[in-house]
Image 1 (cartoon, rainbow, N blue to C red):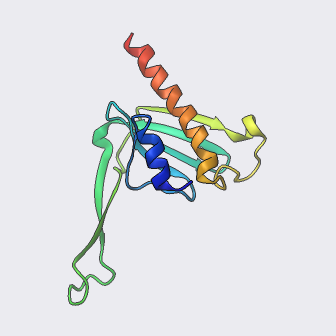
Image 2 (image 1 turned 135 degrees about the vertical axis):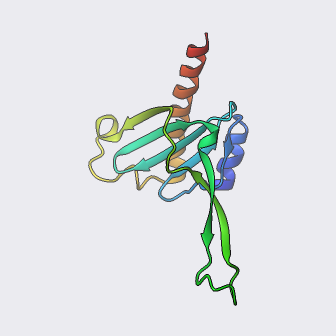
Length: 135
């Protein structure tokens, strides 16, 4: 599985994969149907999903290599990311050490295809809790 295939899978579930997502190590930025932003990371032995308000997204401009403007533009490409001041609204974690017996960095070594089922499980927990909170 690659990121374009994941984007199609997520779109079929009403989710939107955002720029700034990476397959190795797995880090996903996903917009949920209510515009909430979900950030999923797989690091060490932990799989973590944090949700953020839509306003937490920001765009940073990466400076050009030398910045002189003679042979490079003054500014480089823009990258979508979470603001450094973003505060999570909610967090859900799968502790790989407890759940799977992981001991070192197994979460960080997961392939995208292997991490996606964990991501979907955590998103379902997040969405279920939101529905319960509304009722």
